[in-house]
Length: 275
Length: 260
Image 1 (cartoon, helix red, strand yellow):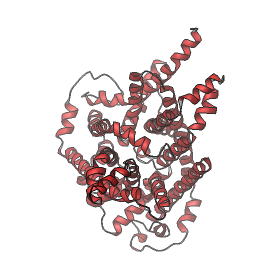
Image 2: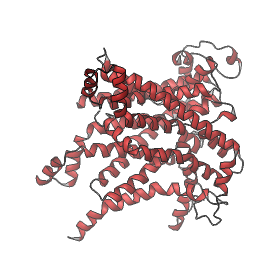
Image 3: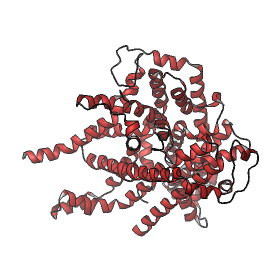
Image 4: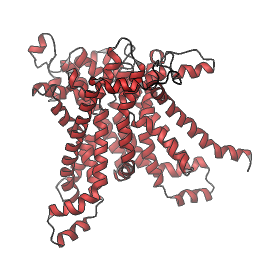
């Protein structure tokens, strides 16, 4: 091989490595600073290595409360979303409905629109119906805002369960509901899981919605308290902020790894690459 | 509802707070006269094109394309690093980059080794900084989409082009890209719409500033509605944002339809 060919072969590896490093470096600060009792904004190997920041964050009742609120908000809203989207997606997948295609296109179309754009009117609606500062209402709004994409995903998963399996269950004397429960649901489990993980991480990371709809400091979920932590203290405790960020990121990372296998399936099934 | 509110002078304080009145097109007239609105619209378009249409697409495609048929462990490591930026919640992304770009942050330290003096990135190059952060945060999505699309390209077609004597560039432009065109348009649509709504990242990093330099429409809308308490005006801006999004999707749907 000539040296030119060597370079050609090595080039993709070099470019990819550089890109990889560029994606990694900004995150280093969070890791190092969270273990450094004298952390600053610059990344450096913690000379005073300690878990003090972690214990400080994990024993602060206010921070713990915000984590609990965040988890409740995300879990309940994603469970609601999964149930509603499954109920909506099943007929869309299985029955001949008038204007079905336009309904599906509208759903896909809506899922793409930026949610940010409707937050001001949603705030007005909340004030109008006196739901302002209500965690339950916020939870339902989070579930509703994820519905278009949830239904879209769910429909694709139901589509992938062959109709013939269900039909043979019916021939064996099973009712539609039994067929759903015994045949479709088990095959759908990965799909349900994907939607669940997807919507959980969306709510967990959502800052804007609770930031606008919740006013009482005690009711704020972690996504918002973490931000206040940064803004309100004149002198910022960067180490604690890093530890908080780290802890806040962990659930999403764990869920991603659990769901990864199914997620990639969701991507190819999501119809996205097929248009 | 949105339509109605945008035609009122609804405000959270002052006389208009207790007496919300129908003011017709006043909000819209005000908007088109407001120099801040114009700046904000231009900033949004620059942000969209640079970070979503170009940045995320190019980086996402580049990574997916170069990764094809590479050693598995290598693919996995690079893929994970790119994904890390995507999984990280927006608020955390903002903090991490705030630290990275700060005066004594990692970037300036690294540049210091090369003898370059520290630069106040968020003050001197706010829009460029925000664009970079958004590319970093979003590129993984495009990477996944392009990986899925590239996997669907039949190997025989590429081989055939190779035998016919097509160079690597020709194969990319004439064979691979046309085959994945549908996926490209869909991905572009999803990514631009997503980027149009970006609020948290910009708000937490720069607060729209310095001045109005990173004041995209969502941040502008938030400030008018909740900082200046001009809810009616804020709603009018949100309507523009929504219409912007609808127009973009219609455009992409047209593209997809003429394609198939």
